[in-house]
Length: 447
Image 1 (cartoon, one colour):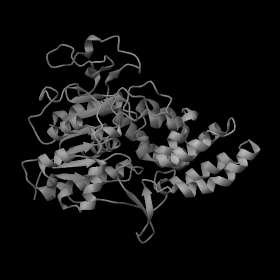
Image 2: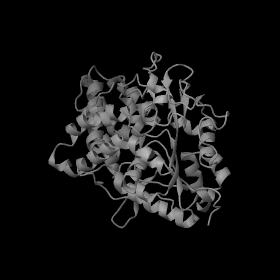
Image 3: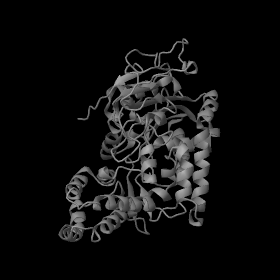
Image 4: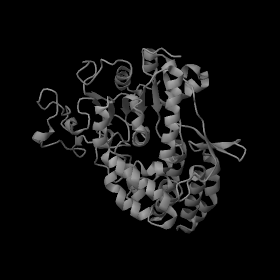
């Protein structure tokens, strides 16, 4: 039984923060499915022959097809069938216990993924939990698993409510949880941390193949690692004219068809305003019927989520958010003038904050945008690029200029805000402590 002075907190991690194993029929581990287990040397060995042939004849000569085939093979462990079910047998590496009961290795891994030591020092590791899941699975099935996990935490701690800490993709998961289980009334506070609440235009650009092909190597870095991407990048620069673009296009097709287009989880981070056109493109055939029904349903709920939040707030749930702004989306994306943290646009992480295109300032502030406590407009960022008044929680959202998505987890101010929100019921909003002004600056305190 934990110390009931504090509400237990459950971390819902982001896309690269849960480990998933590829297993055989007996449940024995074959290899790591996610994050992808990529052997850079073996990959280059496979490409050596086609590469030499391409360079010799100064034309594609099958090189792009080989790259696309290898990427499809690399991504196969996390691939889904057209109906949204997983192609392979997978096992999530889970932690059905508090951090206090985790092994030293488990603790090191969890704190590496989400460095919430400030929080655990305040509430105790017995009140901190990490919910791992398959980032490419069925969001509704994952939400059911989360419901069971919450029940376990409540029983173990004796608490009738929990706090949620959705990080990045965890934001979409928390939305699905509220769709299915809001009636349980077992959530006290939600501390969104760079959460994908309104989707990511980066993922939508990739799905639409609306990308900068000259920066296609960024996709390899997303799937594999920086070292492999750097090696491939050096080779790709030597390609004959047109081959690089063809290779990127075919590689995108491989990743989209094998992973993205068949994953309900990935459809859950397509911005609702771009969903219909992309669903018509990928989900209109009979084989995708079951997946499309779920994706349509989830998109419609996400469209209504701002109104749903008000209903949840009336039931006593409190919502808070931390986000970054002022950076372009990853180099691959053509939506590169949106203010973002490099991965998710600020209008998504805040559910509505108004931001100027990068390099510009906001030039108008409609009267209806004045939502601050005293009636005066004081939610404009110091650089004049963001109006927080348009976000769903204008007084409970903190912004960090030029803050990278992953680096936010190493911003001591952002972590301090999360720790206060999740441990102190008197910490209510941006006015609660002058140590945490609404607008701050980027930090990256990685050791």
